[in-house]
Image (tube, rainbow, N blue to C red; front, side):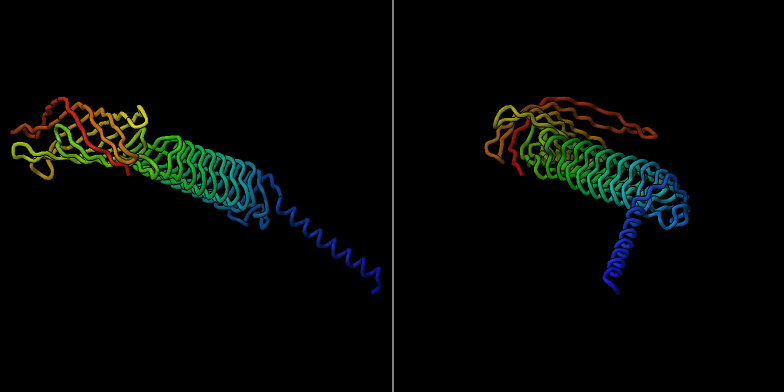
Length: 348
């Protein structure tokens, strides 16, 4: 073969390879104004579905496409290899392996491998393996493996492994590594609260406010309490007992409180605690509630040890059964009186 012929063959090979690469690049960015399918590849895009970005896509059962710039609907499931820009709706689930910008609505779950900007709404769960800027709303759980800036709202639980900036609200459990906003739930857990407040029945903050309080008051001579949360809002679990006239009375209580700093070493605490008082028994099976409003001044002797003393107002509500009444009837007796409390606090 002559030198000229060899050169022509080489040029032809380069052109063939180049044209093939160009076709592949063109296919990978193929735009379809309208796509209709039953289940991929039984649709108008055929075997090119996973290399096609659709403007309008309707999957009667389920579809898998390259991307979306518009709206996509499916009776069961939508899946995208690339990015979603627009609206995705499915009877069961949406799955996006690129980023998502817009609105995702599914009967069961929404799954995103990359960043979400917009809104995820599902009947069961939303999962994002990157950051979320917007809203996650589900009937059961939201999970973000990264930061969330916006709102997480779930019937049971919210989890953000990074920083939650905004609101976490659930029917039971919230977790974030760092909170810059508000947590609302029965149980809230965070490593650090920078600018915000957890509000719930129990809040645990690893770098927050944790105190064991040992003291007494005019009603319960000996009392020990555990306080957890942040200084602005904390939960109180308490138990106390007393002996009077050869009778043992003890109570377990729950309350909430807040600390107001008044100096480098001094704080004012305002707390409300409600006890069920049991008399000569492990449990008194009628209402016997001691409700205390405490106002105390504390002095921090060291970083972890402090002393407190203050005044209180007590409201005792006792339920009494009326004998001989059928069906049973109860009356309530209310007694109010002032009191005091004093003791020490040990920081954990």
